[in-house]
Length: 607
Ligand code: ADP
Ligand code: MG
Image (cartoon, rainbow, N blue to C red; front, side):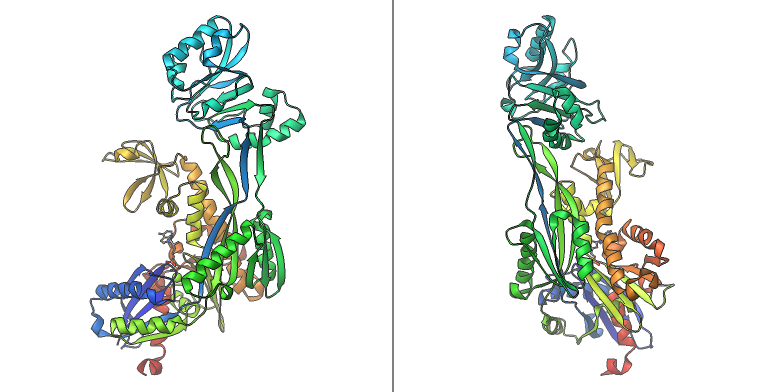
């Protein structure tokens, strides 16, 4: 008898074809397809059909030979994501220009009174000035003007330029000075005020203006004023060049947006926690009252907005009333997002603190029968819905060589991190936050606004194209190539994707991307692995778990399983990536479990 097991996940639908006649199943083919529509709805039909047909093709069999399609009882939980910034940098008056033009000129620190280029001839000898060169001034004229002023004894310590001319000007100066260019809103630079200009040597970042006391020294600030200027220094950290202008009323504020609080209603009580207290505080609260029954955010705040956003999306997707959507788990993650500084003069960005929330939502059960009916009609094959997903995952995981009961599985998917422990009974949990959240964090923290690229950056290591024939891998090793690299990769950071090299358009160095990538994985998967295992371990003690098999799409990641294994090492747990049927890696566990379970019930199978 030929059967096919089908596992419809939030992201992926997996199938495997097996022949059952001779007792234990003989597996003939496996396949996967992207899940169509929301898990558990009739829209899943297309994805399921695609996976089944592909598995049959691999098995060399036809749809007409199939005796049954085995589908799991899809868990009625799906996940949603929301992210909000909780701080905002606002510049009132113009006090700061902190940006990274491609090619600032000169190097060092210069301070003086801001003087328009046209006013230079009027300045007296000995006066310290910062020359402000507006739009439309030719670089040769600019250099000649500065040289003339210097010859007269005016101390031109630095310059700020509208055009991309810094090097062209510096190269023509008798005495080189630091020059910051590409300042688009140059007309807003307040003249007559004291300013400091800093340009770092190539490969370095500024040292003085990114340090509160450095700014205090340049402007002779007292303690109170230094405290006020501190956000400026913070916003300038990591820049290659910067300009700070002291205006009497000038002010940069580091505003905290009212983030609001979350009210968590759990089986062990109800508690409220402020989102601004950070992810750690939120998660400690969740842990204290888990399992969660529902959660609400303070109306009119970001917390309220985030949760109702999740609730609305879920209600829409599952066609159930908003009032019936229950939030069964929450994962809060601290993050930061580059945001344009309000009032900046050169399109400055500051890293603002943000909180990302992933939520697990319980949906009304039932459409599974509908889906089975549609499948039956569409394929013309008997369809059996049976088997709890967690039980099936355990059965599938047990086909991994070297495993035995008691066995815990950790299923790292796209939307949720699921865990199950097979002791006498299978006990399982579904936690919010998994691969999709990691992708979203990478996307937001690097300011990419490109989910596809973020997904590639998550899945593959990086390299820097140092020349057309030479790649510096992120681990520092060098790879030489016979063929020249594509021109668009030159001097860029590239991802070593499955389809060759993909240049990363952002200007981040390899190390920055790598740090963000690894930290995002850590914040989501290490946190969730521990959380999930604590919930299923006997008495909540991880030491009670012997074998942990990691499954799911995110278990294919090149560093996540290692991070988890490392985090679990102190508990004496054997933790490794599953290898379902000694051939499928961490994929296909539930589909395989469905077939195994079916084969073990011959009476039922014959019915
Ligand atoms: P589900 O069970 O929810 O349908 P999957 O088990 O298919 O989900 O996992 C989907 C997740 O796995 C996605 O977040 C995807 O980015 C991730 N993923 C798939 N392949 C890889 C890979 N090679 N490396 C890292 N992550 C991967
Ligand atoms: Mg899955």
